[in-house]
Image (cartoon, helix red, strand yellow):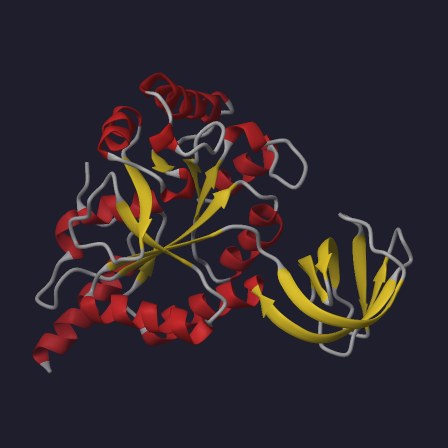
Length: 306
């Protein structure tokens, strides 16, 4: 009982501090478990959807941006990136062009790494860490990345140790199988390791019927009677994809395209990335009181990576 009380007090002290000393990462129970969400590419859903989800839950995330894609259609603007960082979210590099770095020459790799960093800093933002496009890297790529960045995230679908491999941080893609993802969080908690999850666009996929007319890409969708609003993405057979903008669409809704006037009936919600994120954050908070949701940079600080 005495050990348990000591542990609880230590955790409360950790959560009350804005920065955590390295030695506080470890206790008689082992290193504190960590969870990080990284959003790749710089899609505008990072700003339109993810930011509100994380702010609502008092959590943080990292956003890895392709600099050539910023200020283009369906991607974030520089002002939106600044707002994210002003709200304590992390901006990461995802290179200039999103090329597979391992297939490039050394000069091309250096260009993608150095110019991306310089561009982001030129926008008045801090950038310390990199996410490899396609998680693609090699010994040479990692060597070059170390010239410009504190760390770099790869894939490998593995957990990170208490002292992580800083230029090949392990990560898992977020799937729509919520139970599977919760089990992964539980495993990180039990093994007291650092779990990094990544994803791209935050969309909803639905099954529809009774279609009348053709929806236009990018148009606003109105859902009735739920009162939800979305942005049409694309349609494939009887599957439609849209960005959730407000409220929550429900099976049974009628969908109306504000510009096209097209309509259809929403039969079933196949997955909702917004809901997936919410449930994973809530599961972490309710089931793992000592697991911290941190940015990549914060995770490195906690693990003692200089």
